[in-house]
Image (cartoon, rainbow, N blue to C red; front, top):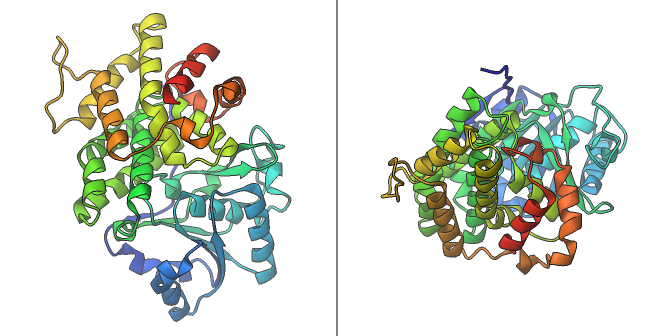
Length: 393
């Protein structure tokens, strides 16, 4: 067994109604919060009022759209001028990553670009981030327990990470009740992202026994509840399953990396106005197909091949799945199920976002350099990566 490490948030609190603890938990970490929400902060008025009732001051910072270098730089200025000593994010992955990056940069100074991988200077943080509380209102990214913040750079047309182990949240407060208000389209796209983020770490070349256990549990819960939560959005058990799948995926990816789906997704999200979860949904089946084919041709003894079979069984464990001669579930069964789910969710191909074949070489070149691609089961060739894009188009 190879050596591995595992790092996560200092404290994770999960369960219906747990958001009610926000004020008391925040009061133990600071007295003046920079509060990130989405562009409709009135949707979390109860939580905002609870902070006021506990005697906490706050400066509101709504985030519209994807997190970016420009947004984070403005947020740092706002926090410094207000003398904030705590950062709280209540929202989806964009809101959480914006808060996470801001908490890291407030004590360190400089421009966000100075600290970014790939396109920036890649400087290391010298000072510890401010205390940070993450409270997700979607079930997809698992950003509440990851140690990086994915930021878009308009100048470079790409998304890259600001990363440091100390960026893990002091408290990840996960209340599935907050996800009940997600509209169907968001439920669909974030749910597909959650599925991808428990599958990719499971077949990652950097998987370990701890992340395996998290992914297996997440694959099973996604398999039984992903379609159900879309069809029955107020079913509490299904919402809880997907909130937990998202959390488990965040824990796993932070310690075992992802793969080609997210290697592409970061680049495509930076170049085009496309929802992250929808990109992942379009890419997931062709990436599985490409990886399985490449493993069979170049590394037929690689145990990750069996992992794809096992993962298909976990996703489809409560269904009658097609079996091969050995009696196990085939990766194709999972691919078919994922494609059928995308059709049910009306998730379009990549072409719907203006992605064209003339850009494929540039997309592949950028994607090959991404951090997520390092977790793929094996390196894929330029032509194999292009073929994935063609199939996902």
